[in-house]
Image 1: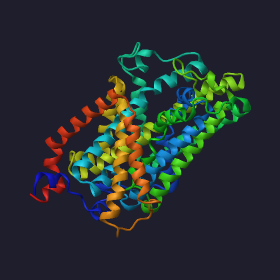
Image 2 (image 1 turned 90 degrees about the vertical axis):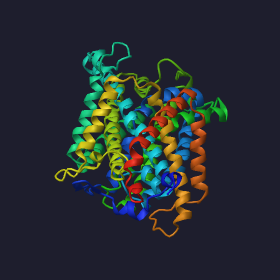
Image 3 (image 1 turned 45 degrees about the vertical axis):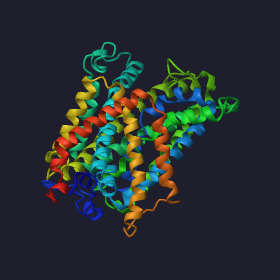
Image 4 (image 1 turned 90 degrees about the horizontal axis):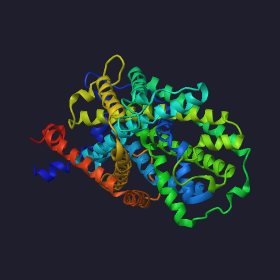
Length: 473
């Protein structure tokens, strides 16, 4: 078999599904309900972005930032529908990595998995880095003191030595993950309900100061302003695919995974639109600064109430939001590595399952160590920003995968079918490329270097250890 044919060889869908849940030494346990899967995706999506992003997006769109959130949601919806179809057809832990393996071949699957490593491991480290600052803001407001900069900031930041706070939140998430998937899902559900309650509290406070005059002019920068803001807030929707990484621990994956993906996007969109409307109705859009100090939700809440205590509650919500994101994204990373290891593309240690806890313990500890080092010691810079382009690349692959699988294997049982096929996946892929094209050149450079490193790793290890390739030696 030629090199090209080996690189483009696909793994049969039936085989991918049959191997689901099986690891070395044990099996994953199916414990997650539809509710828990939905909140997993909400937990990964509804992060700190909404707590600060309005201060950056409102100056671009004015009160029409509400439409920007809707437009971004529609853009995400095309990819979400494609994810829903493949999650119902191939309900395994590998998410878009496994979907690519079944439709586009091993090399594309590896590239997709490598992008997911960038999306999950690096982004969770970047999110954890900010936890210390939010925690300090809360401690300063409530107790009048803050933790030293030396342990709440990374090297390269003012006064930073080791970001101990970031390491602590990663270790707390690790402790929950080692307890088991069910326990992690319950903890995440608790976190998600708290941050949704905090955001609803924000809406309740700011709607008391709502002034219809603040919505005029509604779109001062016109359509261009709305689309510019939509591109910016689009990244607040990244994470809706988290449920797809739990395919081998869901009780009824074929039914629940597609529903969880769509429901989570609907919940997040409703919350974002409500929060955006409450914010721009309570404060004139000209008061949101385009640069410098962002008008965070805490600031808007304090202004609307004429007091400081609402901002404290919103700041607490941001602290909880980061904890939830760290937990769910680390979970997703371990399950994707689990699937890649089972295929032989990365070392076998990542697929070992503790027979008592029924979780990949070694995998989880390795991910925790890697993320802790990144969060505590490494200035992530442009690599963290490149997570956006890696995610969009994975989204585009999923959209193309739906097209390929429909035409190649139309007979496969599908619990969910993407509506308006083939227009939906085509539009999903095109929109991902459009958003990617709008990213900065330095972000593309970081992404290119990451991809180059990934190809080196594949040809040095993955190609030679691939189980699929070993079968044709």
